[in-house]
Length: 185
Image (cartoon, rainbow, N blue to C red):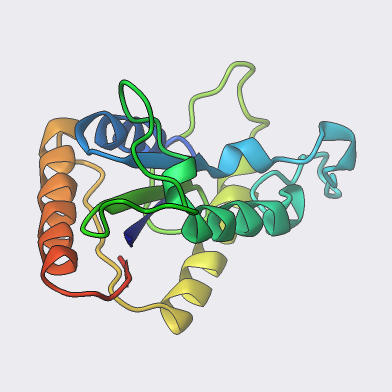
Protein backbone atom coordinates (compact mmCIF):
# COMPACT_ATOMS: atom_id res chain seq x y z
CA UNK A 1 0.00 0.00 0.00
CA UNK A 2 1.42 3.38 -0.99
CA UNK A 3 0.76 6.77 0.58
CA UNK A 4 1.18 10.38 -0.42
CA UNK A 5 1.11 13.10 2.24
CA UNK A 6 0.54 16.67 1.05
CA UNK A 7 0.88 19.61 3.44
CA UNK A 8 -0.95 22.86 2.71
CA UNK A 9 0.15 25.71 4.93
CA UNK A 10 -0.17 29.44 5.09
CA UNK A 11 -1.42 32.33 7.10
CA UNK A 12 -4.82 32.24 8.77
CA UNK A 13 -7.76 32.88 6.44
CA UNK A 14 -5.63 32.35 3.33
CA UNK A 15 -7.76 29.71 1.51
CA UNK A 16 -6.08 26.52 2.74
CA UNK A 17 -9.28 24.83 3.88
CA UNK A 18 -11.07 25.62 0.61
CA UNK A 19 -8.17 24.20 -1.41
CA UNK A 20 -7.93 21.08 0.79
CA UNK A 21 -11.67 20.38 0.58
CA UNK A 22 -11.73 20.78 -3.21
CA UNK A 23 -8.73 18.46 -3.59
CA UNK A 24 -10.38 15.89 -1.31
CA UNK A 25 -13.43 15.92 -3.56
CA UNK A 26 -11.30 15.52 -6.71
CA UNK A 27 -8.84 12.85 -5.59
CA UNK A 28 -9.53 9.17 -4.96
CA UNK A 29 -8.84 7.69 -1.54
CA UNK A 30 -8.11 11.08 -0.03
CA UNK A 31 -8.47 12.30 3.56
CA UNK A 32 -7.81 15.69 5.10
CA UNK A 33 -6.58 16.52 8.59
CA UNK A 34 -7.37 20.11 9.54
CA UNK A 35 -5.06 21.75 12.07
CA UNK A 36 -8.00 23.85 13.30
CA UNK A 37 -9.52 20.66 14.71
CA UNK A 38 -6.67 20.57 17.24
CA UNK A 39 -7.13 23.96 18.94
CA UNK A 40 -7.11 23.93 22.71
CA UNK A 41 -10.19 25.32 24.46
CA UNK A 42 -10.16 29.13 24.75
CA UNK A 43 -9.45 29.02 28.50
CA UNK A 44 -6.18 27.15 27.80
CA UNK A 45 -4.94 29.66 25.20
CA UNK A 46 -2.59 32.29 26.61
CA UNK A 47 -3.27 36.01 26.37
CA UNK A 48 -0.45 38.51 25.83
CA UNK A 49 0.08 41.84 27.57
CA UNK A 50 -2.11 43.62 24.98
CA UNK A 51 -5.04 41.29 25.62
CA UNK A 52 -4.59 39.24 22.40
CA UNK A 53 -5.45 35.56 22.58
CA UNK A 54 -2.38 33.83 21.16
CA UNK A 55 -4.09 31.45 18.75
CA UNK A 56 -1.31 31.76 16.15
CA UNK A 57 1.26 29.93 18.28
CA UNK A 58 1.89 26.23 18.48
CA UNK A 59 1.05 26.33 22.20
CA UNK A 60 -2.59 27.06 21.25
CA UNK A 61 -2.86 23.65 19.61
CA UNK A 62 -2.71 20.03 20.64
CA UNK A 63 0.10 19.42 18.16
CA UNK A 64 1.02 16.03 19.63
CA UNK A 65 -2.51 14.88 18.85
CA UNK A 66 -2.27 16.22 15.31
CA UNK A 67 1.05 14.41 14.76
CA UNK A 68 -0.45 11.22 16.22
CA UNK A 69 -3.40 11.50 13.83
CA UNK A 70 -1.03 11.81 10.87
CA UNK A 71 1.06 8.85 12.06
CA UNK A 72 -2.06 6.75 12.66
CA UNK A 73 -3.25 7.54 9.14
CA UNK A 74 0.15 6.62 7.66
CA UNK A 75 0.06 3.28 9.51
CA UNK A 76 -3.40 2.41 8.22
CA UNK A 77 -4.72 4.78 5.55
CA UNK A 78 -7.22 2.30 4.15
CA UNK A 79 -9.21 2.30 7.40
CA UNK A 80 -9.58 6.08 7.23
CA UNK A 81 -10.76 6.45 3.65
CA UNK A 82 -14.40 6.04 2.74
CA UNK A 83 -14.74 4.11 -0.49
CA UNK A 84 -18.17 3.58 -2.01
CA UNK A 85 -20.03 1.26 -1.61
CA UNK A 86 -17.80 -0.10 1.18
CA UNK A 87 -14.06 -0.12 1.91
CA UNK A 88 -12.24 -2.60 -0.30
CA UNK A 89 -8.99 -2.67 1.68
CA UNK A 90 -8.07 -2.85 5.32
CA UNK A 91 -4.65 -2.69 6.92
CA UNK A 92 -4.98 -6.33 7.96
CA UNK A 93 -5.85 -7.47 4.44
CA UNK A 94 -4.58 -5.17 1.68
CA UNK A 95 -5.99 -6.65 -1.53
CA UNK A 96 -4.46 -4.21 -3.98
CA UNK A 97 -0.98 -2.99 -3.13
CA UNK A 98 -1.03 -0.66 -6.14
CA UNK A 99 -3.53 1.60 -4.38
CA UNK A 100 -2.26 5.00 -3.39
CA UNK A 101 -3.88 6.69 -0.43
CA UNK A 102 -3.61 10.46 -0.10
CA UNK A 103 -3.56 12.53 3.08
CA UNK A 104 -3.77 16.31 2.97
CA UNK A 105 -2.65 18.03 6.16
CA UNK A 106 -3.85 21.61 6.29
CA UNK A 107 -2.60 24.24 8.75
CA UNK A 108 -2.08 27.94 9.28
CA UNK A 109 1.46 28.46 10.55
CA UNK A 110 3.49 28.32 7.37
CA UNK A 111 3.71 30.04 4.03
CA UNK A 112 2.00 33.16 2.68
CA UNK A 113 0.24 36.44 3.51
CA UNK A 114 -3.48 37.15 3.54
CA UNK A 115 -5.76 39.56 5.30
CA UNK A 116 -7.94 38.37 8.15
CA UNK A 117 -11.65 39.04 8.18
CA UNK A 118 -13.36 37.75 11.30
CA UNK A 119 -16.53 38.53 13.16
CA UNK A 120 -15.97 39.89 15.69
CA UNK A 121 -13.08 41.74 14.13
CA UNK A 122 -9.52 41.31 15.41
CA UNK A 123 -8.37 43.84 17.97
CA UNK A 124 -6.40 46.69 16.33
CA UNK A 125 -2.80 45.67 15.76
CA UNK A 126 -3.39 41.93 16.31
CA UNK A 127 -2.47 40.81 12.79
CA UNK A 128 0.64 43.03 12.50
CA UNK A 129 1.67 42.59 16.12
CA UNK A 130 1.09 38.87 16.53
CA UNK A 131 -0.24 36.84 13.59
CA UNK A 132 2.27 37.96 10.97
CA UNK A 133 5.36 37.67 13.24
CA UNK A 134 4.31 34.14 14.24
CA UNK A 135 3.82 33.21 10.59
CA UNK A 136 7.32 34.49 9.73
CA UNK A 137 8.83 32.63 12.68
CA UNK A 138 7.30 29.27 11.76
CA UNK A 139 7.94 29.80 8.04
CA UNK A 140 11.64 30.30 8.81
CA UNK A 141 11.75 27.15 10.96
CA UNK A 142 10.02 25.16 8.22
CA UNK A 143 12.43 26.34 5.54
CA UNK A 144 15.38 25.29 7.71
CA UNK A 145 14.05 21.75 8.16
CA UNK A 146 11.95 20.82 5.12
CA UNK A 147 12.48 19.93 1.49
CA UNK A 148 10.25 20.14 -1.57
CA UNK A 149 8.25 23.18 -0.51
CA UNK A 150 6.12 24.68 -3.28
CA UNK A 151 4.96 28.25 -2.72
CA UNK A 152 1.68 29.44 -4.18
CA UNK A 153 0.76 33.00 -5.02
CA UNK A 154 -2.35 33.63 -2.94
CA UNK A 155 -3.34 36.53 -5.21
CA UNK A 156 -4.04 34.10 -8.09
CA UNK A 157 -7.61 32.87 -8.67
CA UNK A 158 -8.68 29.88 -6.56
CA UNK A 159 -9.37 27.72 -9.59
CA UNK A 160 -5.87 28.38 -10.96
CA UNK A 161 -4.29 27.39 -7.63
CA UNK A 162 -6.50 24.31 -7.41
CA UNK A 163 -5.50 23.25 -10.92
CA UNK A 164 -1.81 23.75 -10.17
CA UNK A 165 -1.86 21.77 -6.91
CA UNK A 166 -4.03 19.03 -8.40
CA UNK A 167 -1.60 18.63 -11.32
CA UNK A 168 1.32 18.46 -8.91
CA UNK A 169 -0.38 15.75 -6.86
CA UNK A 170 -1.22 13.75 -10.01
CA UNK A 171 2.48 13.85 -10.96
CA UNK A 172 3.44 12.55 -7.50
CA UNK A 173 0.83 9.79 -7.79
CA UNK A 174 2.36 8.71 -11.12
CA UNK A 175 5.79 8.54 -9.48
CA UNK A 176 4.36 6.46 -6.64
CA UNK A 177 2.64 4.04 -8.96
CA UNK A 178 5.91 3.54 -10.82
CA UNK A 179 7.91 2.85 -7.64
CA UNK A 180 7.49 1.35 -4.20
CA UNK A 181 8.48 4.30 -2.05
CA UNK A 182 6.37 6.44 0.26
CA UNK A 183 6.36 10.07 -0.89
CA UNK A 184 5.84 13.15 1.24
CA UNK A 185 5.30 16.36 -0.71
